[in-house]
Length: 66
Image (cartoon, rainbow, N blue to C red; front, side, top):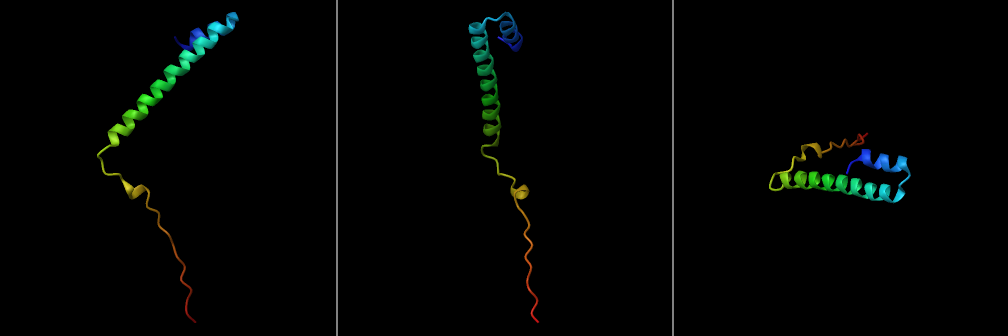
């Protein structure tokens, strides 16, 4: 099932088939996105996180003594 079939079903006015096509297409896209996220998370397990990007410098003003 692909988006071309979905569009074709919509054009022909077969709303029941279009709904099923939509559900299938969205399910496939969701599964692909979840699989990609699983791989991303799994590849980071056991590695030391790079915290240098997370460190933020803070400037503090100290009032002068007069």
